[in-house]
Image 1 (cartoon, rainbow, N blue to C red):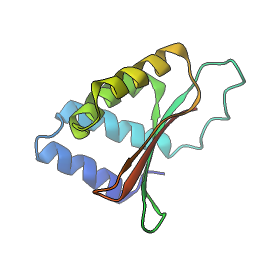
Image 2: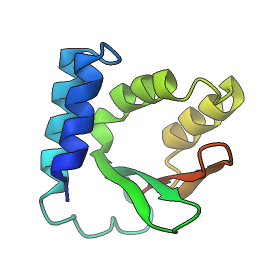
Image 3: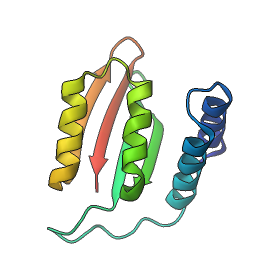
Image 4: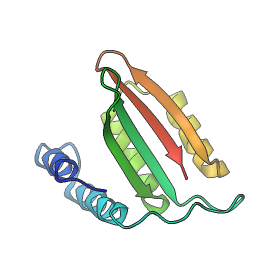
Length: 125
C-alpha cells in the first residue's frame, strides 16, 4: 500500500529535479495501482505482472520501501533506478535487463549497502 511518505518522496524528487514531472506522475500512478489488492500470482510459465523493489534497514530489519510496479512501467523504473544507483555497475543493470527479458520470476537481485545500512532486493512476480 502506498503511504503518504512514499508519495512525498516522489514529489520531493520532482521538486529537486532528480526526476521529471512525467516520471513522477508515472510513479504516483504505479503507487495508486499498488493500493489495489495484488493480483493472484501468475500461473507457472505465465507472464510476470509485478516488478517489486524492497529496501530493508539492516539494523532494525524493518522494510523502509516496498514498491510494486506494474511490468508495463518497468522500463521507466529501470531508467530512474539507474539515476539513483550510480554505484550499480553496468554488469548488474545488464543482468537485470536480461533477466526481465528472459521472463525470469522470483528474486533477481539482492544488494547490500553497508555504508547506508540497507539491503535492496528486486523481485519479478
